[in-house]
Length: 194
Image (cartoon, rainbow, N blue to C red; front, side, top):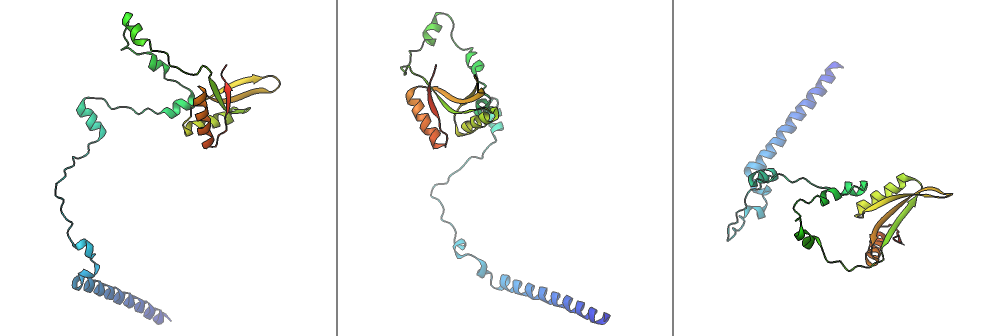
């Protein structure tokens, strides 16, 4: 029995060696004797040369460019977090040190009034008893590109409600915003600003 096992193992080993040898022979024949069988005829032709040579300067990293120009690297400013947390940049905008002072300041800072509709509107996208639901809608609006705020009010006999509002807008802006909200699947109600 042991002799039969040895013959089977030897037969398998000899078969593997002969198979590898045959595969190697076929590969050598194909690659050495007939190499054109695996060459794409379109690739064999040289590509036509362009009439005008074009030189492209190598790209440099932004930090190397900034260091070479003497200007510090600019930091990215993300608006998404400001919208979600209702933090504003008013402190940064009001501390303008380059604004002129004295009589010239009155001339420079006095801008002509912009003709706008006197009626202002808020758009209410939702009202929730749960503050988490209001924050979820506010985040959904921020992702869609709208800046909203959550207003908490106490309503007698109903408890505390959290309103998600956008605005204030004039009448034409309110209409455009309602249409844009509707395209994003959000229904909003137009309310007079008080």
